[in-house]
Image (cartoon, rainbow, N blue to C red; front, side, top):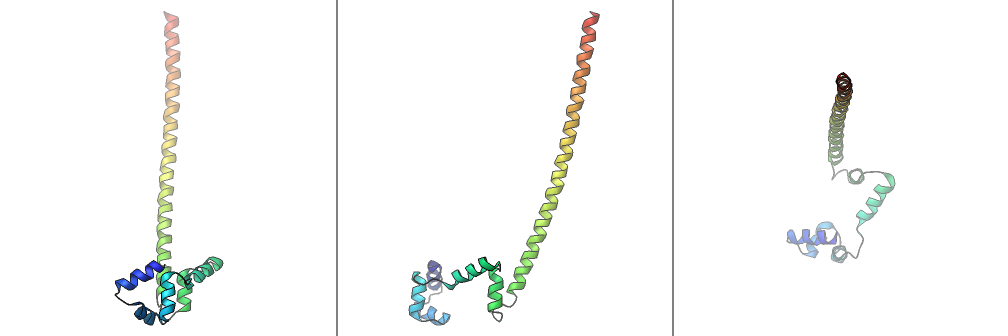
Length: 132
């Protein structure tokens, strides 16, 4: 994560002091974040999510509602779209499995027909051999 902090700061052409000011922390605290000497609070938030089953979006939205307006709603919309896509996929998969089952039955029927024809052919050949 510290690499992300540094590359983002450099891409924005900010000094460590300017980034610290924007974040509302001291330059020393920012330097520790950038060097990886301080564990980012995100680790605690992710551990909380794992322990409670809450999504990261829910935690952030509930913790900072004024800054995250609509974020949770977007997450719900994505979840609904994902569920719809998963249901559509499962329906298509069920239809394909039904098609396969139908074709398996057709193949089985053809195999049975071939066995019957082979038996009839064998009987006809034996009759023919007896007449000779």
